[in-house]
Image 1 (cartoon, helix red, strand yellow):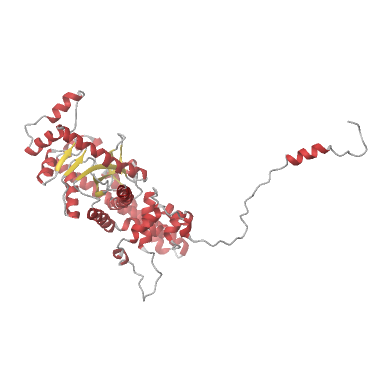
Image 2 (image 1 turned 45 degrees about the vertical axis):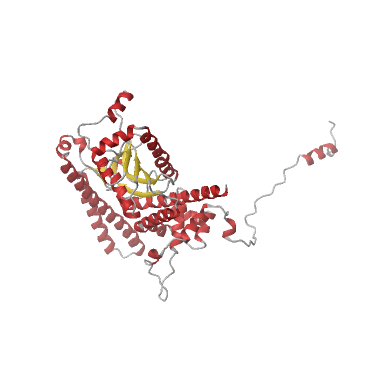
Length: 454
């Protein structure tokens, strides 16, 4: 290229090429642009969204027992209370979505359209949500019974054959929180001293901000003392039970068998879990109608095994529905001679799987079905029933029903609970039972509509 006094213009074809290969033209976000929109929450939520199903059910619920507890009434001062139907709908929807934290639900009410739709412009906070979730055990149980009874009246639930199974749900306590009586007494003494120290500081501190902070610390220390006191009571109950069963002397010889209780969740018990390990847990019992998969009974036990838990469940069902199931299906963890006899004499046919022991399957199976010298007539009839093809075919229905409930429980993120204590655990599982039945009822009605259409 020759040197020139002034730069020469580039060739025309190069300019055309640059124009063709220039910077991309993009639609960029303009978040500071003001705009007007005319819309409503109802138009933003799909017609078939499950939030609408939940709300349709909630609208038909009698909330007068909840409204009776509200102190803000017409003609008196005070801020209006949140409609109990909104709280019911929020927690049912959250349970279906596997949300177990009140803070997480509070955020969803601000950010998620389905939860904003459920609120309908009503403001909620996590304190109110957390309290409502665990405060209404009796009311939720009533809703569960009334819902199943309504389906029975429609012919969707027959309550002829039920399946029962237990699920070990992980407690909100760590294994390291379990202590012996000596360590619990030491921790209790320290906690009481801390409460007294904080109380004195609270009374002598004139600063408002510091006073509020110390009040919170004093409240937390006081709650710790209450839990330790409860742990001591649970430990005493364990010892009394061991004395009654004759295991006290055996436990005294083995230091590893020393009784322990949790300082964070005193009512939790260390149980053998489905994975073979041992963890603090509760034994959740669900009884399900075989024909409809509707949960008709629920209980929470501190017992590590399922033996003897079928009879109380059937009695609960009979008390609630004035009807006793004709048959019950359960796995090998339920049978005992006393249980088989009790179930049979009460009018329910037990289809309980017989435990098979030994390495030789054929021989051990024959031994399990063989009569024993101490068998009662009811136990003999049970062995014959379970050895028959009819009994084995009937028992197959158990897994299809009971295991489905467990799968839904895991899907709803309830294999490990965030609450502490039998009452709160049972209340949270009642929320699950209501959510499960609501979804199951929808499926039953869809199948019924399809059958009638064809």
